[in-house]
Length: 619
Image (cartoon, rainbow, N blue to C red; front, side, top):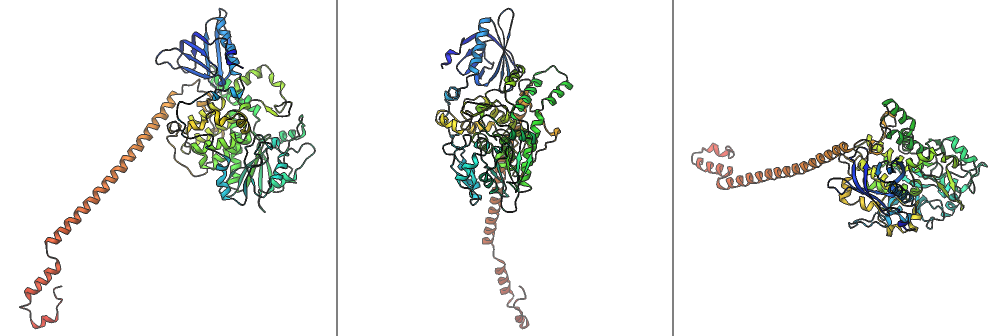
């Protein structure tokens, strides 16, 4: 396919661009290229628009009776752009071109394969984080308990797992191979995190128990091997008990029924259900939230009612609460935890990631957070291509047209070869929102800023970098992303770029942080959901001022250190001079012993015989 076939009109003149909370650009030229939508007025001081087609979620047409009309471009990062175009032909051709280009889904045609940076790459982000490097410390700390397995070296066991995983040392690969057939998507239990007290965090797919109560002895040995004699563990299921029961009873086409672990076969484990809404419900919740945010004319009562009805902050609360429960089991009870939901690639990853942020201070640094994203989401198998193909605006339109009725109750679609394809979702956004909530409660404990989180969300939907392309590591290797694209981490970790994402009030906190999940403690993320409605420039200026003050504070501290050192040098010089003067004075005058001897000589002629018996009389 050639991009030129999709572009009906490459350039349109006299276009007006309107964006909430930003100045209107009039008389601009709209250029439609293979990957970008560009609008420029060619006037000094006016900002140009460079928008990746991949970032466009929905194009709405509002034609005028006299010709032409307005294109409402709704983006996956929740920004909304209005383009007023004169002339019906240009209006329709531009709309057709933008819609066609924004729906291109072939990964090898993404802009990341054509992007070439204008700077030299200091650090290759593709090799910055690996399973061996990330888990080497854990293996060294518990070399008798865990090992790195290469059972998935050709991705035949689990396509969504990386080549190497960390498993119990006492379980051979042959048993793991059998246990993988008992888990949804082949996602057998693997190690995510080891707490300093020895408790471990694992994740997996749901067991394929089915309505017949199927069991797998290899899976039982794998999970039970994690616990020592007398220890207990928790299995946290992110589904409600009813939903888990439904998954067990339903037999999908060419698949086996799901379910939960039967306690009789896992006697040391206690199962707890901490239900979080499924990914399709989350997208519906996000869609309602954006609809409420875009209605700027509603009253306060109606706005609060719509915000509450969306249920988004409730989903945030439930996700955070589940992560806090897991962290409490690990930290305060020293019990190991296994987490799963359905396929284990959505909310499971959100909970395991949030748990590590709560417990592990390294995950609150920039590089540590990058490693967490790489380990849990990219190598953990979150299907970014599928989940982020569309966002809430497109979902809202499909909901209006009743297209949701075409989906199965579980919202899973199957291809002819039996592979599972899920509809778009916002699990990663939910995770980032939860991180922001913790950041908002502990602003001094995170090395990165709010802008860093927003950047990750934006690049996960549309980017010039290849980091978030494809659904798993296997697909990324098939497309040779490491050699054909640039990693986002290569860009972010440049010293000048990283500095722009630093939190100016950061103070390293080695302690566990316990976020509040009380409704009054949770807030709507204005910077993410209201950035196109509320002017964010004042907040940016505030943070820039704080950064400048902190930088001035650093300079003043450096100057104070120099002055202290200079003062110390002066004191040392003064004492040195005083010592030399004292020595010089002693050399020019007789000592006290000399004076005594001299006095004794003078009085020797007049001393009496009795005085001779007291030679020390004058000493």
